[in-house]
Length: 250
Image 1 (cartoon, rainbow, N blue to C red):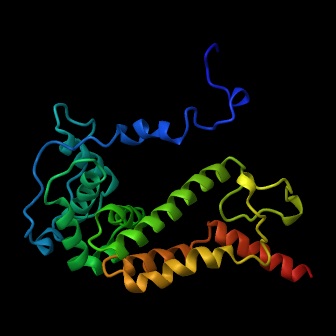
Image 2 (cartoon, rainbow, N blue to C red; image 1 turned 60 degrees about the vertical axis):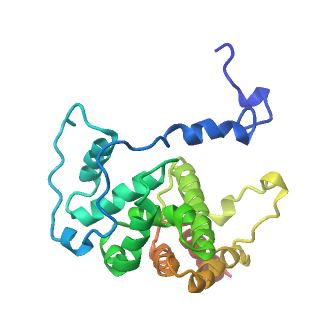
Image 3 (cartoon, one colour; image 1 turned 45 degrees about the vertical axis):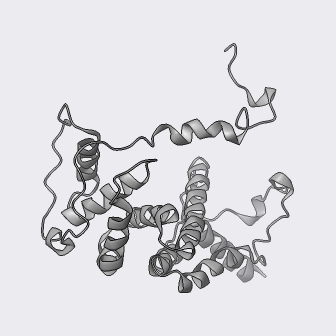
C-alpha cells in the first residue's frame, strides 16, 4: 500500500524515534471522571464482607468514566469484595496523568494497613499492577526505585512471552539446545551462556536484596519474586530445564 511504513525502507523500528511513542503513551491517561473516592479514613475492614454484585451485560448506557471502570472491574474481580474493587479503582486512577488528590495517600494507606490481606487475596495480576503503581506513587525513593525495576522486569517478561507464544511452544516446554541460532545478539550485546551465565543472578538477586530496604514494597517484591520462582512457565524455568538436561547428557 502506498505510503505505508515498511521496515525494509527504514532503519528504525519506531519511525521518528522513541520520542514518537509519547502520544501513544499518553493516549489512555486522561482522568477518570465521575464519583469521588471514599474518604481517606474509610474503614477497610467494613468493605471485606461486602461481595461484589454480578456484572450486568450489556453495559448500561450513560455511565461516567469511573462507572465504566467499575463495571469492567466487576467482571474481572467477580467473587471478590468491595475492598478488592477499591484497590483496582485506585490503581486505575493513579495510572492517569491527573487523579483525585486523595488517591495516592489512600493507596499507600491501603497497602500499609492491609498488606497481608492483599497478598493473600488478590490475583497475581493485581499485585503486579500494585507494584507498578508504587513506581510513581511510593512515598520513599527506595520504594519507587525498586518498584520501577520490578515494572521493567514484568513488562519485558510480558513482551518476550507474547513473542514466545508465536513459536508454537507452550511456556513449560524448553527449547532444544541443539537448535540454537548463533547469530549475534542485537545492539552489540555479548552472548549469554545458558549453561554457565550469571545474568539471572545479576538481574534477580539485587531485587530480592533491595527489598530489605524498601518499607512499603519490600514484602510485595519478595512475594512476587517467590511466585516467579515457583511458576513453571517462565524463561528462568525453561533455562533451568535446559541446564538440567545438558548436565545429564554430559
